Amino acid sequence: MQIRQFQAQRMRAPRNFQPIENKPIAVEIGAGKGKHAVLFSQQQPKTTLYAIERTKEKYEAMQKQHQLTETPLLHPIHADAVPWITHALYPAQIEQFFILYPNPEPHNPAQRWLNMPFFEFILSRLQDNGQITLASNIPEYINEAEQQLKEIWQLPYEKQVIAPDSARTHFEVKYLERGELCQQLLIQKPAGYTTRFDDFQPLLGAVVA
Image 1 (cartoon, rainbow, N blue to C red):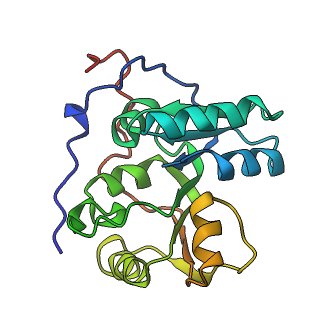
Image 2: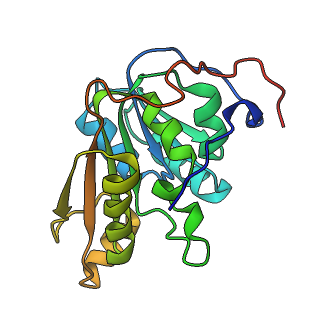
């Protein structure tokens, strides 16, 4: 599969966009109602986590969860991940990305994360030796992602079966209760790995859509 280059300079900022500080952080893409975001922030209280959710109802549920917990370094973000990441994040800033149970896009495979041109931009934001955790209950999704890691992105990874008692997200709980096989890829960015966006700075002050 050939993947075209992501057109970062054409990406408009989300509404009410606020720039963030250039410091090491973690980012969760598609955070849903915030179950994993809150758990992570409780377990890693010194790590700043930006948890992005596009759907208003899920974002509001995450906000409520956040307000009920002492997690001052958790920042729920209501936005589409692609423009927010393009405008907010700096090169080699991110310690960890989490993409847990993304939409498998059965009718539009080009929109799966590792098939998107945007994945190269994500890699440019990741620190050397940083990690992306990609989880799914769909074996074909994981298998395709593995193939892309080998053939397109040429990145090392570890494939794991998720424990039956894991409960990071509401989807994970549901799938494991059904007895479904849940798997994850722990993707590493080696030191010296390069992308075409390594010098691309956030589009601060750009026109808001």
